Image (cartoon, rainbow, N blue to C red; front, side):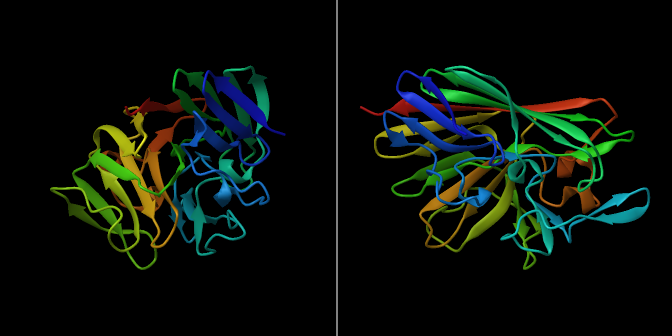
Length: 283
C-alpha cells in the first residue's frame, strides 16, 4: 500500500506498512530524499522514517526499569546486535487514520512487550508549497513515567551536495558506536572530505541547509529537536541528517536532561516534534 501526497510540483510517497516511512520526496521530478529501494523490505533502504520512542542506539539493548535492567530484542535483523537501534516505529506497520491529496495521519501502538512501556504514536504529514511539514507525536499509555525520544531519519543524495549548519559541539562516538567524548567546535567539520562521520552535534542555531546545483533544501526543526545526528559513510552515495530530541544512549547516561535531551513523560502525557522541509530553486 502506498499513499501519494501532492502539491503542485512536489510529491511524497508514504509506505504505512513499512515503518510508516517515506519512499520518495520529489520536487519538479528531482529526488530530494534518496529514493527507497522498492525491491527491499529493509527499512534502512527507505527515504525517511520516524524515530520513536527513542533515537539512534541504546547500549546493549537495555534500559533500567524499577532498579533492574530490561533487555530488548534486536530492533532490526541486519542492524548491529549489540545495541538497540532507532526505536520501534521504523520496523512496525502504521495504521492510516486519514489521507487526502495533501495530507496524511498515521498511527502506531505499542503494548509494552519490547520497549517496557506502552505508548501511542502518530505522524501528521502535510504538503505545503515547495515542501512538507512532518509532525511526530507520542503519548505515554503506561502506568509509570516513560523516557522518550523523537526524531526523523532522512537520507539525502550525496552527489554534488553541500551541507551547512551552525553548531557548537559534538558527542564523538567511540569504538562501540556510542557517545564517548564531548568536543567543543569552533567551526563545522569538512563534511564530505574525511573519514566516516557518525556523531550527534549540539547547539544548532537556525536552519539546516543542503545545497545542490539547481536547488536548496531548508530543514527547520522545532525547538524540541535541539540535536542533529549526522551519518556520512565513506564511499556512499547518500548521507543522513537527523533532527533528534536526545543524544544516543541518553537513557543510560548519567547526564542532566539539559545535556542529554532525554525527556520523561508521565502517564497520559504527550510530547511532539515538528520539522519543515522547504525547497527553493536556483536561477
